[in-house]
Image 1 (tube, rainbow, N blue to C red):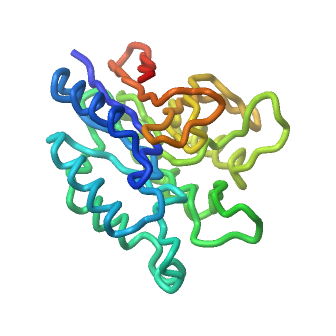
Image 2 (tube, one colour):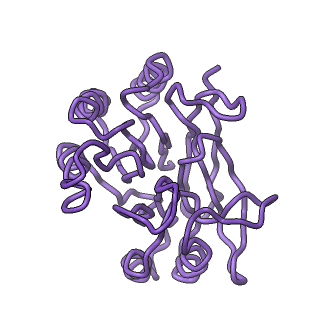
Length: 246
């Protein structure tokens, strides 16, 4: 037996690709994975109507849903709320769903890469704070003797493109090394709307980076809508399958 996860990201309800969403829903109902992981940008502008649409879609899937907040999931048009309680709408959605994170072959550990405001533009890029890293380290350390795979879920890739020196995620290298030392086997993320699966290194530490594409109409660099199927078996390799929805 194995644990199967469907990994999606950047649905952007409000600009969602309805055909792509239907294809994922059909596959879930046919294949019955153990959970669906969505690594952020659930909505386009964090509107109540967009969160309501997301809630309806997730609920109809009838399986555990693991969510991470993305930069688009904090209010754009309610500045007071953004600065006082930016994750209120996200938390309300997550509370309605079964957010089970521990399975027979794998445990999912959260890492927050979003902040309510930054000292740079654009605010869309990631920031990993020291407190966020410590929280994830504690969760991973508690699993030190656990034989299951340990996958960290985040919105922003912790490292930038290999061909570029600049990393748009502030604190990403430090976070990558810290969670690798703490036992993370891979980091699942999204944000860039382009899928990837690679082993990377930072500060002498290696880990696998697995990215889902987008299920929205906001395509980039010619990459079609896509999602991943991740299969985990204790004592075996993590297998991934990219499914493009051209």
